[in-house]
Image 1 (cartoon, rainbow, N blue to C red):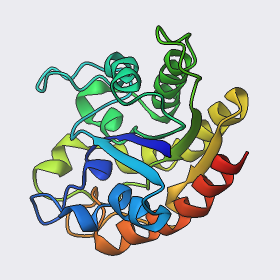
Image 2: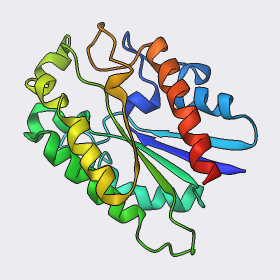
Image 3: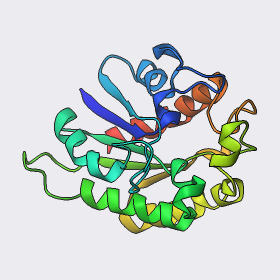
Image 4: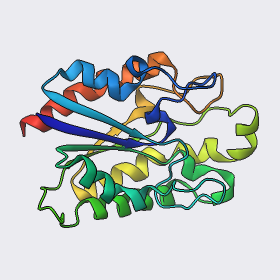
Amino acid sequence: MATILCYGDSLTWGAAPQGGRFTRNQRWPELLGAKLGANHEVINLGLPGRTTIWNDPFREGRNGSLSIQAALEIFGPVDVLNIMLGTNDLKRYFNIGAYEASKGIEQIIQKVRAPSPHNFPAPKIVIVAPPNILSPKGDLADMYQGAVEKSQGLHQHYQRVATLYGCKFLNSASIIQPSELDGIHLDLLANQHLAEVLEPMMLALLEE
C-alpha cells in the first residue's frame, strides 16, 4: 500500500467558499483517495492559514516548514508528498510576492530531502501551484490586498523550483479557479477537477 500525503492549507483542508468545511467525500484529497482505491492511502493534512515558512502573528502553528518533518515521521514512510501552499503567503501583512513564496517551497523541499531519523526513503514530491486568486470578498479583500496580481506569478516561480529539485509540477491555475463567492477557496467542481487531474500523476509516480 502506498501512502500519499497532501500537505497544504485551507484549499486542501476543504474550506467551503460559503463558510464551513466540505464533507470528506467532497474534498479533493479524499476524492483522490477514492479514485486510487483501497490499495493506496491518501492523507489530507491541510491546515487553514498554513504558509510556506512565515510565522503568522495572528494564528499560531501555521509555518509549514516547521511541521513538515514531524508529518513525515507521523505518517511515514510516505511514498508521494503533494505540496500545495502559497496562497496564505500573499496576505498583505507578510508583504511578500510569488518569488518569496517559491523560496519557502524550496526550504520545505530541502527539509523533506534531509536524512530521515528512521531511515525512511525520501518521498517523491509533487509541487502544486495554487490557483490564481480572484477578487477576494468581505474581510478577505483587505487581507489579500494586492494578492490577485501576485498570485498570477506563482506557477512560474514554482515550476522553476520543481525543475531545480527534480519534482513533478502541476499548475492548478490551468485547470481550476477559486469560487467567485470569496475569490480564494475552491468550490465542489474545482475539488473534483483537481482530484481527476492528480489521479494519473499519482499512478505514474507510483509505478516509477
